View 1 (cartoon, helix red, strand yellow):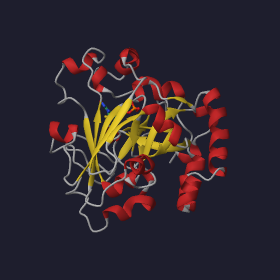
View 2: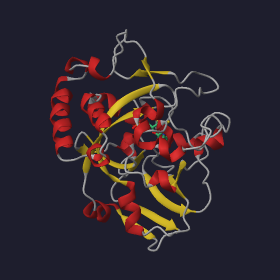
View 3: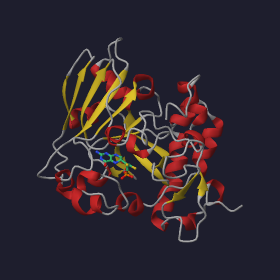
View 4: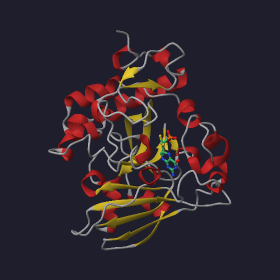
Length: 303
Ligand code: MTE
């Protein structure tokens, strides 16, 4: 079987410039002790070395960001209107130091690293993205998480004058998301500020977006303005829109289908017209790292 996946991929599968950059960044990244090294996961590190990121063009021109429209090319077309600098993120709720954190102050206090992650949308397409950013846990540490906190709630900016899509009630704006605190503190959970070493474009969620690589892409909320530590499971946009279709957890799981389509396989964006769909991996390939978070849970019920 010739799935276009892992070792089957060659540099010919991505744009020449991107492929050149990728190879160097993968090697450099692993050498510098990325997350996979830190977790001591040899299998994971080998997989990461075999991942060939999508091209910059693919990652920044095929997007979901409904505040700018529901078409895949709407965000690239309209998100330029978003004022993403200056920016500040309010961190409140069950924290020792609540307040507004200026984006520049956050950047000054974080060490930016690269993470090459698989990205799997609930719509059954996928990409491989070289993100730049820092662990969410490091940001939460700035605010000092109190021991009574159990969940983290996130909120996207709501700017009707800059976001043409919010005139339509496709979702209940602002876009909100949430994680259990242990998920939020997991070392794979990332706050992205860049792609391919460049500042993250507006259509991908500038200036700061969440990336949770073992969950469906809609959990990775964009252009975050507020993070709230709480003791209750927070509401999430897609769960509010379709509770039977989108659960709070939304872990990638090839064995639990969406009510309207299979989640067993996925289409790699940029894979070419005749590429076979590739099998979807449990927890999107991060099973070794995250399965323990859900020990004893019924993953079909807690979808
Ligand atoms: N965040 C906000 N605020 N609004 C959105 O519409 N779409 C989600 C997620 N984050 C979305 C969002 C979905 S469905 C996906 S698949 C990813 O963003 C897409 O991220 P990308 O465009 O960087 O690939």
